Image 1 (cartoon, rainbow, N blue to C red):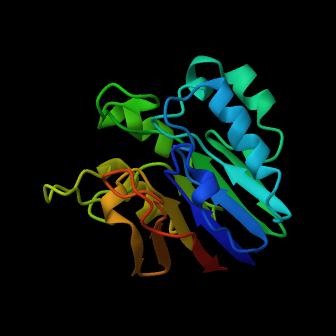
Image 2: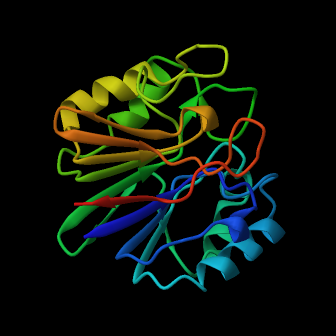
Length: 206
């Protein structure tokens, strides 16, 4: 299975070159302000992609999925939306979750420690591909200030689950790939810290 992944397009998805593959994954922040109009535009674009399967999670900019969840999910007709949920495609188990440690009072923020741990405890053991918006602590999570801002509790959950792939974004400037043990980590952010196009889609095989 070939997975084509991106994240943090912030309504600039039409600037992205998307190669064909089996599954297209967007790991959050598809929008800039999180309005339903932005979502409609994103959904229309998703409908032009050739992939047989498309998976989307929300990010901290994607407000409509938190404030108007029923309306937002009803409008996303060209992809499967995952929020603390799983989907199985050709025997491969995907799990998606939008949460991240508290960050400037944006959407899907939870406090570090027990509050966010409750969300990561929901990740099933049978998870081949984990999709979150934010990174785990110490893995492709370093800001321009040199700070590792990923989630400590997510890192502990990964030690329990050990997925084959973990796809995320959120920290634009840390985009890239890293392999640790049995897991390939992909920060698939499209835009850089200045919100300029910086990285094309990440193509992964499983």
